[in-house]
Image (cartoon, rainbow, N blue to C red):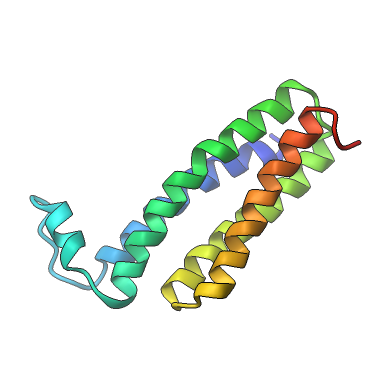
Length: 127
């Protein structure tokens, strides 16, 4: 299976990883997860924010992959964009944890540009 399709699974797993980081190592009451998240601080709070942002990025990436796949964008181009997206999104979460806001924003932008690239290839704008 092409990496671009695996990237959909990887992108869907990233929010779960950040949720795990937010909850790891503390007494966690799963009966009140929203209250627990609201009490988080430091890197755990930022991990929760990284989780939310990862969920928000997933639909755009999924739509870009589907559009590129349906329009028969060359597999190598899709795989390259997928590698950039996954690396950017993983880095985004790590930079969230490290509280590196400017670099995190740059990583977010790189991920968005990877999705935009697929949309533009699918639309025939880029050759």
